[in-house]
Length: 75
Image (tube, rainbow, N blue to C red; front, top):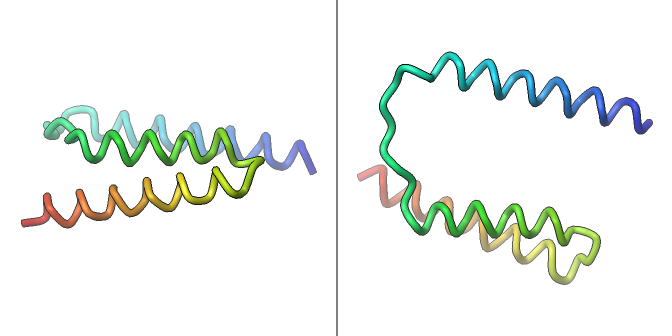
């Protein structure tokens, strides 16, 4: 079972690298402070995922902030 998760992680990493190489020539705007905060909270939620009372709310708030930022940038 553990080998399956390692294989999935490696495949996901390869897909991310390929997508980054494809999008390398495009110009994107810098992420805002709200988006950076949202991504940081998601990462902290994953790190503290063993404690459900801390990890899940951090992930939820991080996703909420990222969605708000995406809606603001859509306009």
